[in-house]
Length: 313
Length: 279
Image (cartoon, chains in turn orange, purple):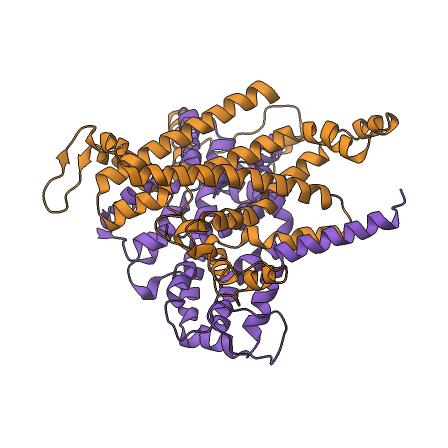
């Protein structure tokens, strides 16, 4: 660009630029350069991720006060967790939510992937259309579901099931149904995501296995059971794991629809943390629960990595 | 392979069911938002009648949705740009430079990939109340409080690192022989070559920031700073607002992420395949 060196075409060593600088200075520059590029990232990560993580951990050993200095309480916050019946109920709801949502979304996604596999134009259009729930933000979907599942007899879903002679249901206002409506909503939102991962899994299945199954006279169902399912086990593992990690910290889905109600019937670990932290202002305790949730998430991620390496190399 | 007529009918029924479940709700929302029939709270209509834009006018101007939309666009606009910029710089160092400490930095960033943002909500809220170094001003209740915490995102750093690693060393060497400095290599060689990856990172960053709910909920107090997803819930509290207006507001809130998805769709699946996308 700046100078044309005739020697560039010979076999000699490439001409060095910046030869005016001393070697020591150049080495220093080379050592500092990467950190200059990393600096903005390191600053935002430190200030908004690492520092809150550490301070949250420390906070869990204190009774946080606002005008007086906070009081060190050792493991008291963690001990209190054992006697917190509201949190226990919330944890139970979270577990039901995670398991039902994961299985529901994975099964639905599997059938979606089977039905919508292939490069045909109409299939591609349907795939694009059903992906809209997946990219719409949770709070907006929550707003939609509140209207769709309105408990009045003229609510859309209630009128729909009315066609089949089913009486109007309370849905989000009924303590025995609210959690399941939320689970349904989450399945609806995550199934298209899972489907895309399954579709990629389907593509990677060796076509010859299907041909071999055809030669053996296998039925469609048997092929799905013996060829397709084993072939997408890695994809299933990814889907299940992501859904577990996301599920245990479910917040917006609940907060924006029911706020944990009615009568606490949809409280989850995170809505409980929010309540204790931001409504009762008991930061130390909320931090302790948060830390356990974080620990649990990390353990699950490690477990997943270990299992994945073990089984799929 | 010829398909039998029964199989074909079955297929059409299955497609119809899928569309009914996933697109049906949006259809009812669309029809309701554009129709002038007065509805009871929580009611939707399926049949288009008396077309009107009045609902959108009321939602946009009278309910101040324009204001919340503007807030959201400011947050998502600056957030995405900053996120991609910061990630690209970090990825350049991690992918193309050998230096002591690279493994530690990678590990530290990797840990945040496992970190659910929700569990640091309280300490993060307290951080926004602290005066920021240099400017000596807390960012609480400013746009910055909703933007800065989402700028660092491990997913986009790793995504870009992976793509930058794949750029052949020879191209960089050739540029250096031509006298390009480090910065020029980054801007004129690496970045143009990873354009598809940039597309992926932009769309995921956009949707991730648009989806933020807890963060804007806790770090902003003024109603006039609220983002659209958070403000939507406050609209329905007003009993005079008909469902037509609420769904019109909902549609406005959906539009940006749907538009960005349709525009950058081909970059999308690649990101999903990276597997580790969270939230």
